[in-house]
Image (cartoon, rainbow, N blue to C red):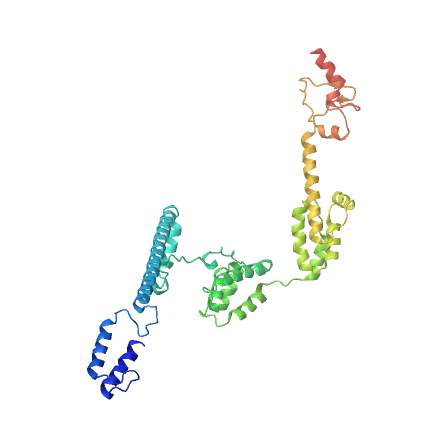
Length: 368
């Protein structure tokens, strides 16, 4: 039996007598001596159950040793991360110093927003986290001033809308949008704004209402019938196909025609020489493909013409005799244009040959 059971049995024997099986007739002194002898034989590392082999102290010691090993490993990993973070911060500091030394204007412009930033929202320098600039940090160029030309109204409003969408925090209020548009007006458009809002610093209207009145005053509605007539009258002329195609695309977008109609109008507007080249090829399926093919052919034709002109032989100029030559038809005129149109020699005025083959000039050279 184990120590606890044995000790309990001994106590029962001491107080109740020799009633335990196998111990009848024994005195309490014998029981006490046996108990003391058993207590002296108990070792410190003995457990309550003598059959148990796992010692609690040894188990605790192994667990503590394992935890100590884990803590040491974690400490080493944290130390390595700290070293890497310090190295990263050092490189960022060097890069910042380099940028400030080579781009002083950029560092000056960025210092103001950084100083106004809330410290509670700023990133921890030790964390190494760097905020990436947003799209609104890139400033867009302001639109050109609108002078009231109806043809430029839609383009001006489109550029203003790009500014509003790019920086929504700057134009959160309708008054900011109205002020921006008025600040970019000139001439008649500025006169209109001055007459309308001179007595109202807050404008007294929403941006949608302002935009409606602005369009009523300056926007020219697209007349599809006018665009169609303009499209039918267009001709390539002396322009390159690239230049002509730009104007054609503008009118085509406003006309509302379908692709087959636009292809027919485009082919009809091209020069005859280009039409002859396209006639030998398969017709492209779309207007864009037709325009691209026409541009390639036109570029090749123009390049070939330049090459042919550069290889043409320029006749060598011959000295004009000091004395005026007399021929049967009289003295040669000093104006060469009528003689060139009549295909006459510029030296003797005779037909059938030119200056380079003039027999009179050759005889004069022989005499000299």
